[in-house]
Image 1 (cartoon, rainbow, N blue to C red):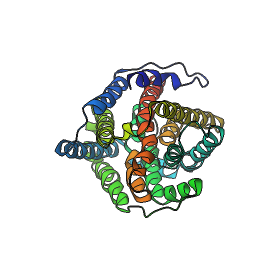
Image 2 (tube, helix red, strand yellow; image 1 turned 60 degrees about the vertical axis):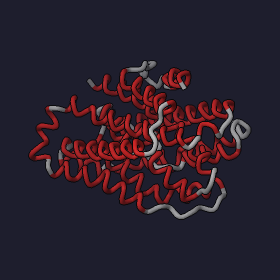
Image 3 (cartoon, rainbow, N blue to C red; image 1 turned 135 degrees about the vertical axis):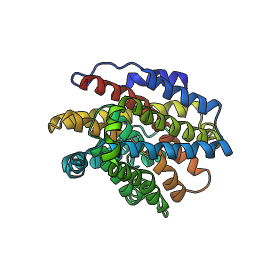
Length: 335
């Protein structure tokens, strides 16, 4: 795991004026959390506690985002159709195409079930908390990110099983509709409350923006630790031989690199602003582990669930590590 974490920044490729990125403290913290979860996972009552803390942190994140955003910014985020079309196309069209291309070009690189897991990861919606947090760190269009990531998760409840069934030629299952209410309670409700309270707490939130940035980073760290702890406790890492794991690392890294390169290039081709470009990059390239788990449990049974989740479990920290470094680069460029 240490070797993987140390090599991740090398997957960030020069695009235009992009230069090679190095780890900062936050990226190192993400790598440390993954290592801790691997060797000291939480389980039982502690896992429930960390899960609860993660939900509270996510709710606090969206509450503060709502308090920081002006009404004009929210309206602009909701009506920016080019931005939302780009993100939706990346999430539900570009990724499935990339996944199918990789399975066709390198069919023997992974066992059949792992390739199905890669395709499953490709059709998942954008993750909510990390894509918005990374957009915020990068000083991007946070209002647009909130709207796009939330809409992606709502649409993904229906679109993801249909897309996966079409790609893998398998019969889909019934998706747990309680995920919609979870998104509403954890994302929309805190955001709306924070926005409604903006006249009273907005100035305070703006003055303390650097301090409140800890909420953005802290929510990511909590979610990563809890998710990887669950994976380790259920023995996911033992279900695949080392060589297959190494190949899977390369596959998910190439998948992410291709998505980032294409989204940056396309954003600049259609002349999106730097703020919107960052939103497209982070909302488009992120894949939701939180949405993936209930959907996988609905579509698969028995040991197949673990194999289906392994690619997204690996993609999740990779996207955060690369995303954190890229977000810091965007923030430096915007300073």
